[in-house]
Length: 126
Image 1: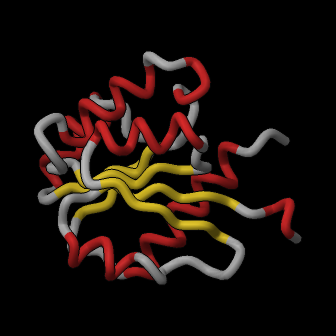
Image 2: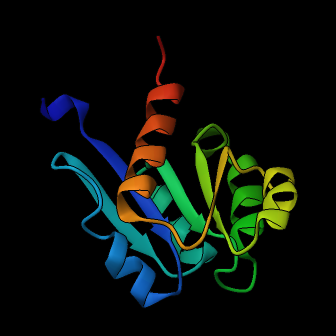
């Protein structure tokens, strides 16, 4: 089962959000954290994640900037991105920014893990 291990990168400058989601995923899923787009890109250069969960309002560039940077890097361009947004009205902006999926905060931990892992499954080659 070790070969099916997935990695999740959560990008948020909200320590409450990060600690809340730290244990949301089942055993066998490695979760790492970044506080902003720059830290996230550095982390992704070291290890490409199965999915990136990004708070739309994180740091100066937010999810939009991180997604744009990821699209410009070939080996990161297809990594699914789950954007966390404040209001349903922000979904259009998130989709324009490259979000694969969008969830409106507040989000229950089980819902977040379920959505993120479904993106991993959908992105896996058949």
